[in-house]
Image (tube, rainbow, N blue to C red; front, side, top):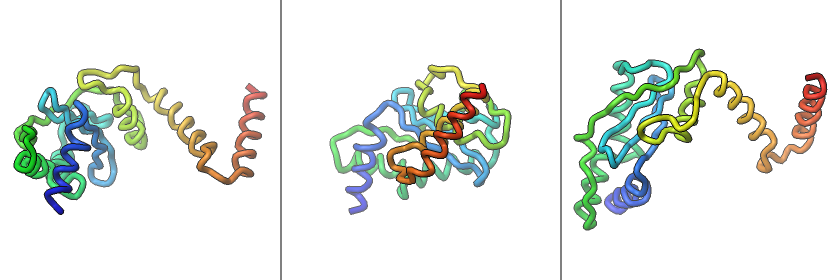
Length: 173
């Protein structure tokens, strides 16, 4: 059962795309993005708070990610998949961990939104769209609106109040 789980993760999660994005929590206080970039055979770190410097906590969190992702060891999953299938999956334990330059946050609470932007706009070499604190702040408001007005939110009375307030604000501006 463990072997089939490892093979399943390798075949359906890790190797079906050129890049796999992992949100990485550092010290329960900060989120950063790690990209497993298969064509380049490297792990890419995109950090919106600590530009181009690995802190000890970052390194520890990266090692935990690489050895314990999805409740199993990423490296071990690849090895098991190579033993069980005819695949030639890479030994990710030998891949370098490189930090890439990226736009920086200007507050202490936007890191999760920067992770979302990285997952949407990082192509493995560069950002495909401009990312800034101003855009992140705008996205924060859109995300709240999308969640509040989502069809999954069945509190119609709350939705109607939000629409009413937004309408009054729009009339004033």
